[in-house]
Length: 237
Image (cartoon, rainbow, N blue to C red; front, side, top):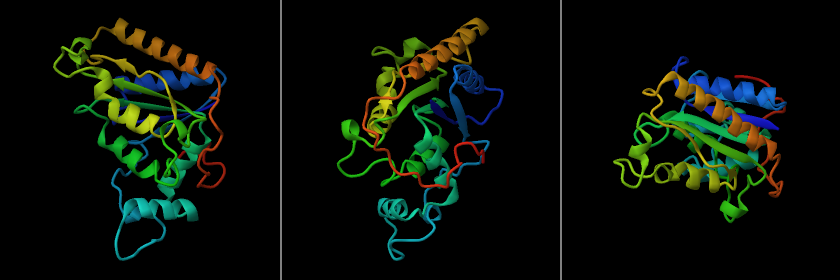
């Protein structure tokens, strides 16, 4: 299987980076292919705008979804977006790896979702959730937090982690029809002892191998079209 890791952390020595390294190693040792979209290292621009498109459906009034649909129909996405969409289209599984900042993903990842998972590419009218375009793909969230497990409970100050992650788990992954695994959460990553971090790394690797061992999903193979040139999977930006 081909696995795309969408990684959003600016620091190479972070625990998120260690998780990324463990994931790549586990995936490849398991006989699968891995590619990393390292958003900070690749300088991904999270800001949406007319620069997302090679031409315009409407030069007078900018309506983002209409321009996305036009670009999807005409292969008119800017190179940065086309590269990422090619990686998504080629992947059998997508792993989102990020720290929890202010109750959500870093802005650079939110921008990736806004720009790359475009209307006409990742979803269209009438094709959402159980009829989503990406039913043939698996997905997994891997999240690090500063807060302890007790804080992410019904009685805790932050609330249950499922509710915190609802916007990306339910309204992004499930929305596109992805077969989403239960999120893997590394609680209090900056505070725990080294042996706990080692346990996180091993358990995350095991979770990935278990997910990939399921093979492709039984969903319809009706993913959106590849919108970039062949070979984008293997070529790093």
